[in-house]
Length: 443
Ligand SMILES: [Zn+2]
Ligand SMILES: [Zn+2]
Image 1 (cartoon, rainbow, N blue to C red):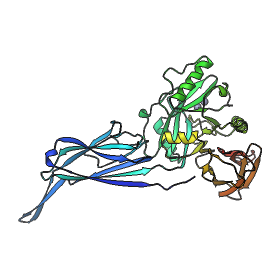
Image 2 (cartoon, rainbow, N blue to C red; image 1 turned 90 degrees about the vertical axis):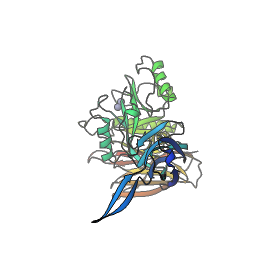
Image 3 (spheres, protein in one colour; image 1 turned 135 degrees about the vertical axis):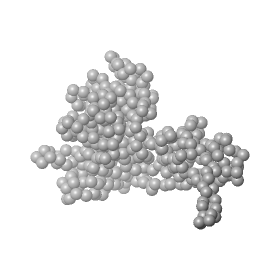
Image 4 (cartoon, helix red, strand yellow; image 1 turned 60 degrees about the horizontal axis):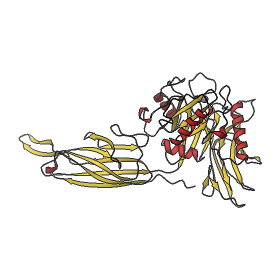
């Protein structure tokens, strides 16, 4: 897998506006490159004329506003992205955040239009220079918490409070998953560089499930009294484009009692809140399904509600996702593709597993020569790094001190291979996982 450097390309557009155009609106087209993560547009023109006059005691400079140019932006589908009069000379837009007056939106490739409002134009005309910089998407690690409650259900914090806390912890995204409460992206606060994934924890007496990434997974109320009605909610969520996660399958008293084989879903939450018996059982079930040949990507979340629940904290666990950007859709796509691992805390261990161009979640053709390359960081002295396949659980490293490592492993036959890092978190307690990766699949 290639990790490219952040690529920024810049274009400049100059336009001369004659005085006769004063009082009219027109547009200037520009082309949005593919895979643009964010854009910054600035514009400059001579807004004032200065004249120096000699007076008895020296000189006096008159400053007269001669040109005023308003700004706005139109997307390829004709939608108004924003307008800002003449007071802003720089605007920023990405999928997560935009300068006030503009809408955070996907920067779809195609022809965009700058709105030019010729409010006032100097008698001799004016030249305006627009500079547009595009940052290209590239795959890198983002960390977040995919299961969080707010005041809208049984949590105690607002979305804004949770976002600020997450940023302080070094997280790049959170998912809002209130019980049977949908949330619309338009209502969510926005912070530059940070992403909030809208979601709902579909909560039924017989099981919980997160529907992520859409405003409305179903058009009807959540209420369901038969399996067919539950099934209809899941199918509707899938058709609306939601990423479906089966939550905490063994956590009493809200175990997942439906037959998952009968429901459409994408991921399994094998790690919910602090590592304990119910999570170890979920990991055991996942291992069994992998051994049977199923490919189910993992998801993790703290299920954070409030501060007074022992061992529960935001980012415990943290899901690390190798995504093309930290927009909701890019994170969910990477999660669905299995390009992710779960770590016990925001500053817990991280991992990357590759085989040639493939990374965790990918399928790669097996040959005896093709080795698995494993890079782990934020290890603590005594950490045990294990490789797990359908037939083997083997320790590849015991950390001699805090640090990072690179190890490799040869698959003896096709199949899946995944990594777990175990640690003694509290003296006297047994080793527990502090990191779990998705597998690479050799075929
Ligand atoms: Zn739940
Ligand atoms: Zn929950």
